[in-house]
Image 1: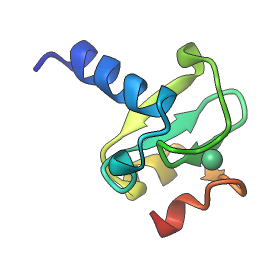
Image 2: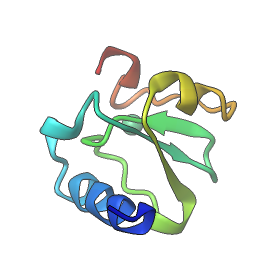
Image 3: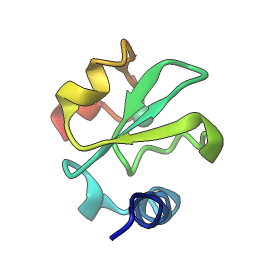
Image 4: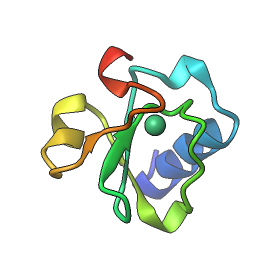
Length: 74
Ligand SMILES: [Zn+2]
């Protein structure tokens, strides 16, 4: 799968708040500098979101854990 297609699939999971995606990838929101689990109720704009395969990778961006979805527990 191409990277862009993988991101499309991940974004679709974020939009549907797919709990099955929790723990499989994390979203970092560039504008707020927080990271979230895919099912987070926060609705960032896609252009601000990057996807990470691991919690360590999300944290490495310097982002903080979202208080709404508690991504560290995912
Ligand atoms: Zn969140």
